[in-house]
Image (cartoon, rainbow, N blue to C red):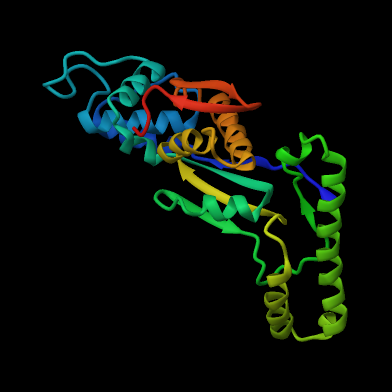
Length: 262
């Protein structure tokens, strides 16, 4: 077996179609409008917020005589006012990698504004097992013995998968039968098996999940994953995550927001 560390790998983010935006701004009467937004996502959220009030420039809407300048100032106001619907327009995709099905079973409970694609135990045969060694075991006085027992169990499960494959002659079977046997064999795979889960969520959802899942009381593994995601999001989108606060709790970063559940 192989020991792994759970990771969150950034795969994709929302970007602006600059030609389309320029066409819209010209048709609205503000062809020279610009913003200092550091990313496409933050720019898109600002644009769509200004659309709501036609607040690209003073006088564009007769009711608006003064507009807020600067992306940081604009997004701070949106978040403070809890206009969270605007944050749903931009999204990011992460691969939760080297993490257990214990974590993925919890994560997929979050449905609104989230899309998932997970490595399939229906199609992907287990040949080698990877797993994270839990911190509770690693920090225990008997850590070496616990690691030995843990590895022994995982290696036995790994050996059983290979034995079953040989007994069934799975490599000589038609694909339909391979799939059926792989599906049956996965019942003998531990939940601690490391897997991959692709996850796309909008920024309203990412903010909430980073707070919810880094809170003390969650499983260490899920706290580590979402602390990692928050660290990456806060670095990538300084204006969208400016109101976040981080403190170390039991060795893992716990995230809170001044404006939670926007």
